[in-house]
Image: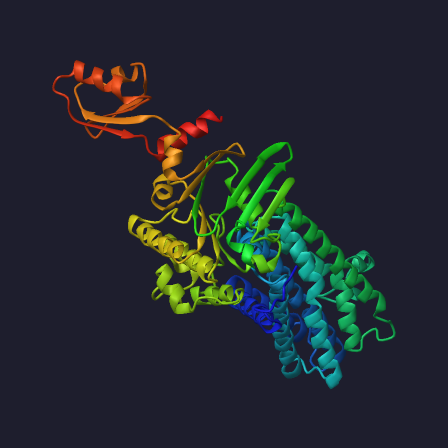
Length: 261
Length: 299
C-alpha cells in the first residue's frame, strides 16, 4: 500500500483524518437522539441520585464515588451508541462500502469515530465535574480531576470496540434496542448507579465480569476509593476486551464485505 | 510512464467470483480503455455489481487477476485516480452537501474546486443543505459531484440516473459527455438501454457471469438481425404474431409493431393482406431488442 506519495504528502493525509473527524462530529451533533440522552442522562442521574436523593452534600466520600461511577456510565453510552448505532446504519446504507471504494486513507473513519467519542466523553466528564464542584461539593486534588478526565476519555475505547462488534451483528434499526439491553443492565450490575456494597451479594460477586466494573474501579481508585488496590488487573481486562472485540468486529466486517458489494 | 496509453485503465483477467455454490462471475475478461465510455449491461443478478466490486477492490476474486491503473485496486495510489458513484450507497443524512464535498475532495491530490463541482453537478444553492433534506434527484447529483470531484481518470457510475426526471437525466448526460470529451474514461452500468445507446462508445453485455457481447453500440445491435416493422393496419396483432418469421407483434398507440427475423416476407404479406396499410416503417432492431435476445440466448 502506498499511502504516502509525492503528490500526496503526510500533511494532506492528516487533513483527511481531521476533516473526517469533523464530519463525524457534526453528524452526531445534529442527531438529537444521540446528543440529548448522551449528555443529559449522566448529568440528570448524578444530580438526582448523587446530589438530591443521596444527600451526599458534605459527604465527600459518597459524592466523589458517584462522580466516578456516573462518569463511567456517561462515557459508556457515548461510545456504545456512537459506534454501535452509527456503524450499523452506515453499513446498511452502503456508506461503508462507498468509503472503501473511495481513496480514504486507511482507518480514517475509525479514527474519526474514536475522536468523536472522545470529544463527547470529555463533554460528559466536564459537565459532571461542574456539577460535582458546584452542587455536590466534591473536592479533589488537581491531579485527581485531570486523571479522572483522562480515565473518562480513554475509557471509551473498550466500549467503542463493543459497540463496533454489535454494529456488525445487528441491523441499524435493532441496534439502539440491543445496545440499551446491554448498556443499562451492565451499568446497574457493575455498581455505576449505586454502590455495589448496598446491592445483593451475588451482584457484587458477578460484577468483575463486566468491563464497566473494571473501568469504574480505575475511576474510583483515582478519586481515592479502594486506593490500596492496584489497577493493573483492571487495565489488563479492559485492554483484552478492547482487542478481542475489535478483532472480532474486524473479522466480521471483512467477511460481510466479501458476501457481496 | 509511457505504457499508460496502451495498458488498459482497469482490467479483469480471467476473473471468477464465487459466493458459496453460486458462481457470480465466470472467467470474465474485461478491459477498460482510455477515453472510452463503456456501458456494462446485464439483467439483475448477471454479475455487474460483482464485476464493479472487483475492479474497485471491494471484493477479492476467487480466481483470476484484477488491475486498476496497473496496480492492485487495494492500492490507495490507484484509487486516488478514480471516482465512484454506487447505486446502493447513501450518504450520511445529517452532513451538509458542503461538508461531504470538502471531505471527499480532501482524498484526492488535485481535486476540482468547490465551484467547479457545483457547476458540473448542478448543486447551486445546495451546499448548506443537509443531505436528508434533499430530493432524490438532488441526492443523486451530490453523489455525482463526489464521484467527479477528484478529477478522476476513470469514473465508475453505477445506475447514475435512477430516480431522476427527464430534465435532470439530460443534464447528467451532458455532464457525462463533457467528462468523456475532456479525456475521462467511464464505466457505466444502467437499466436504461437508451442511456447506453446515447452515451456509450462501447457496450459489454454480461449474463450469468459471462460476457455475451462486447463491441460498439452498432456492433452489438448488429448481433441481432431482427427488424422492427411499424405500420397502420387493420390486421390484428394476434394474427400477425402467428406468422412465420414474426417474434412479437403488438399494437402501440394505434401502430402495429412487429419484431421479425427478416423484414421482406412479413412486409410482402402485410401489403398483400391489407391494401390500405400505410405509414410503413422498417428499422434495424434497437439495443433493447439486442439486449433481450443476447441475454435470452445465454440463459
